[in-house]
Length: 226
Image (cartoon, helix red, strand yellow):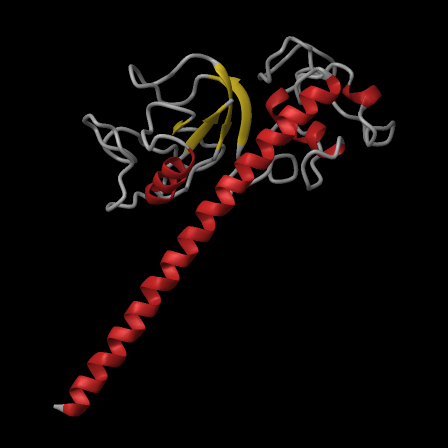
């Protein structure tokens, strides 16, 4: 009996340590996501303040960003005030939501080395803590409380493959905890792999809308609205 009790105690300690370890990993990833979003938003605003234009959309990038040169030129945007897709500005087409990262990095606002290409990839776009691509863009591909999509505005997509409980904690710490309202919401954006499913999967299908914590759906995504 004593030996059995000792074994059970040891098993309990191991399980407790495992669960605590998983909790610490989750906490670290939540903090990483929040810090990543805060840093990118600060970079976005800093770039706008310095150049009076938006990253990716800036028409004078090739001429005025210090690290742009004849060998590694920056791709210009069309200066219409929107970080959009497929502009007519040479070299056309220019996906401004991709060139935005090159503008930010070469202007010194974000770390990393990003070189423009027409297709999103880790060489031109940052990734979240789960290894999937993020997106900085002017669109409405995020959840609205009255419909699937909201009003068109600039937003930062987290990328997919993020567990619902992690996004729930990010939303709780930075916003209102509701994936359909406020500054942080659900988004089905996915640059690769399967797009996240929203109502009934990553968050509840009935009001009040809340991220699903207990189920921990692993393929979810969010958007930080600017």
